Amino acid sequence: MRLTFLGTGTSCGVPTIGCQCEVCQSKDPHDKRLRCSALLETESTRLLIDCGPDFRQQILPQPFRKIDGVLVTHAHYDHMGGMDDLRPYCQFGEINVYADPDACKGLLQMLPYCFAENRYPGVPAIQLNEIHPHKPFQIGDISIMPFQVMHGKLPILGFRFTHHSPNTKHPSSIVYITDMKTMDDAELSYIMGENYSPLTTHQSLDTLIVNALRQGRPHHSHQLLDDAVKFAERVGARQTWLIHPSHEIGLHAEVNAMLPPHIQLAHDGLEINV
Image (cartoon, rainbow, N blue to C red; front, side):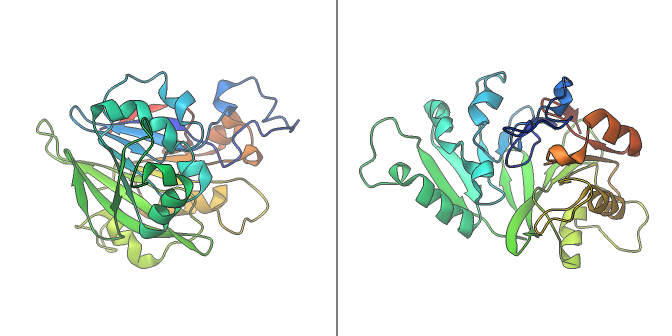
């Protein structure tokens, strides 16, 4: 699997409008962050994880071909505000969007014209598919296990993606979590896979992607950097990439220099192969 980080920033993006801090004024392109979104691909399947308001800008540099599914983590604007910009992809057929009941409701409210009985010509053709935590499903050759994390008091979805390649002995696995504050211990087995045991020292997860908002002041609905590092160490993935930071995280280069090599800040445009 190849994952491209289309955007790695928080809801306001970085730079933040009107801010004069050193991160927002940085000339390092790694400190420029669009809203969180990712593209996950195999040779035959292409998935979009969240579709925020920066989607058009994010997808223009990518090859134009069918998107097999759009996975929505939750019904906040920075994660689904770009859905209307999917309309060019409708030439390949309906866009299948997968979301939990709350996010489905949010999409119906945000894009009522896409679901009207008599739709205006040219509006995106979206097929909503309701999904639930712990109910796995398949899109193309990618297996998907949704699980639940808490965004403050709001339950949202994380996803474990597994791909069984004919060219490798073991399946590749990626877990993607955004906007998490806490998680019930029972969810860990869905993150680690069916063979997980708390007594096992070797775990099967290749790559963990998880949110880290900032350093310093606590936040009511997001992990801080220290929280994310502790969570990453608990999960024990071979590599962890941190996403969804605000400008208060610090300069990209300085933060990564103080983190261990197996836990690093991701950046917009980063491609990883798992």
